[in-house]
Length: 85
Image 1 (cartoon, rainbow, N blue to C red):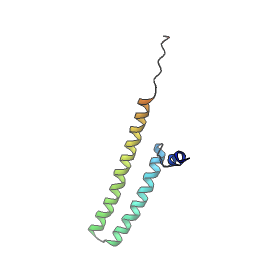
Image 2: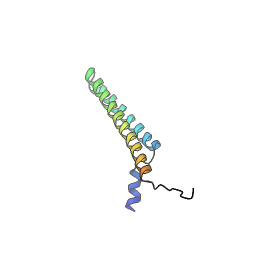
Image 3: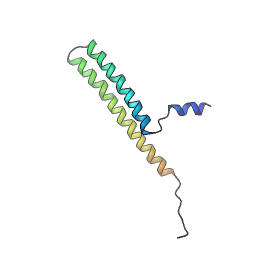
Image 4: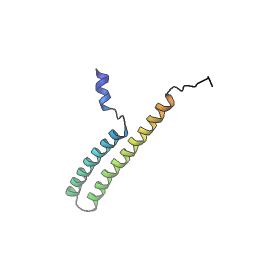
């Protein structure tokens, strides 16, 4: 039962990864607006930019991990050869 629950927290495809990245970006933009209100001027803009860049970096890492996992599954798949030819 615990295994079934833990599978809910595994990113299985690119659509799920994109949805997670989108949610992270929405939260980052909201946090950036709070930074702009709390720290007016250049400091707030830098914090806004830092929060957005963190999401871009995390999104790229998630997409790369999806690619590497797909390649690992393809390499681990058994290869069948037809010897009758």
